[in-house]
Structures are given as structure tokens and as C-alpha cells.
Image 1 (cartoon, one colour):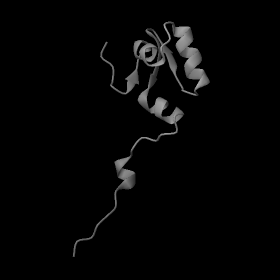
Image 2 (cartoon, rainbow, N blue to C red):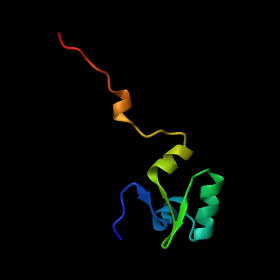
Image 3 (cartoon, rainbow, N blue to C red):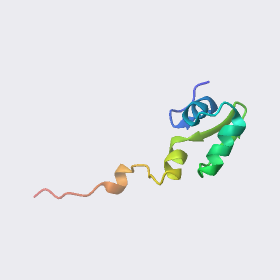
Length: 71
């Protein structure tokens, strides 16, 4: 399975949370306000969903760009 690095798999979530079961991971994600989905391989989420639950925003370089006039 070739997933995007932005996807966090159930195995990665188990390692990160310390829970051994999908039910434990799901409970932890719900408790912490992390949005997730169910797939054939189990629960998964994204880096952005984890960051959002922590109050972090993804960097948007275009939003921070400023036009500079060179004279």
C-alpha cells in the first residue's frame, strides 16, 4: 500500500498513542478531538487533522507571501 506521507495509518496511531487495539486508538482520537476515517485497513487520519486538534495550522506559504517592488 503506497500512501501519502500526510496519511497516518492505524499502526502509526497505535505507536503514537500507546494503545494496542483499534478501539483504544479510536477512543483516544475522539477524546482529543482528532478527526479520522474508517478504511479497509482500519482507522486513519492525516497530519493536518492531528495538527488541527493541537491548535496548529499548516503553513501556507502563499498566504505569507508579500509583493516586493524593486525600484
